[in-house]
Length: 263
Ligand SMILES: NC(=O)c1ccc[n+]([C@@H]2O[C@H](COP(=O)([O-])OP(=O)(O)OC[C@H]3O[C@@H](n4cnc5c(N)ncnc54)[C@H](OP(=O)(O)O)[C@@H]3O)[C@@H](O)[C@H]2O)c1
Image (cartoon, rainbow, N blue to C red; front, top):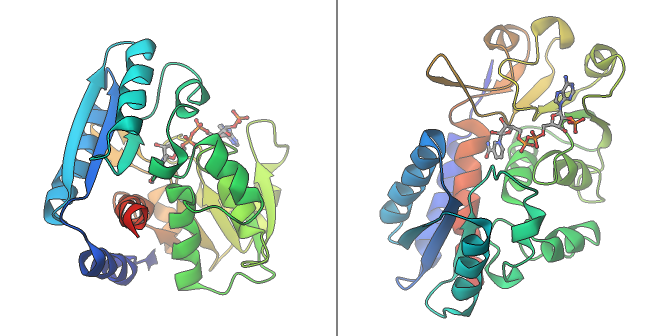
């Protein structure tokens, strides 16, 4: 059983189109991107064109150049949003801290993530926001038991904070590579959010019948994009698609945030 996100995607697209300002500009910065990263950045460029938003990609060859590029973009009034491509070969914090929080449309600078804990963030982290919106569109989260597998700063942790806040009222168990008896936790969960980056990590025998699974993973296996959930899990549970699903909504939220910069 598939959790479709088409209607949610269309709703966000319509909002972007109705509010868009022709002078909006997004700049993505990357450090020596690999093929998969470049493919993602090109899809971002294509979506910008569709939404009539100016787009530029800047590629740096060192951390120092990356920081310098970000500082220049912070001071460039023609740039509304900055997207930092990941993964990076060092702690992203070392660079993220330089992005002007007002241009941080990904919502992952220390300032915006700090405000998230207070429930005051202007830009919510877009992947986490995508997960929460898909869930809210599909079910009532109040009182549900959720297992979040993964505790990264950009996905697992903000998802856990957002799901357990007073808007959503879910009860969250954060799982990671040191978690003991993960299967026992997932089998006792109404909802599972999987963000491990391990292809087909979540297996059918780890999942309760009719549970809700949000697959955040985007992995390449044998030349194909696969998620963190094995394909037969959808025989017994409701699962988001990869590609599509979380990734599709995340990309749109990025542009929704870009428009917010100008409001
Ligand atoms: N759809 C989107 O828009 C979107 C956006 C961002 C990322 N992604 C994808 O989401 C996935 C996760 O990304 P990320 O940046 O969060 O990855 P990450 O930083 O590598 O974090 C992976 C997490 O998984 C945990 N983990 C690894 N092995 C485990 C195991 N055996 N049992 C339980 N937990 C385990 C790790 O635990 P430890 O902390 O103990 O190491 C870590 O917390 C990737 O496939 C990425 O491409 C998708």
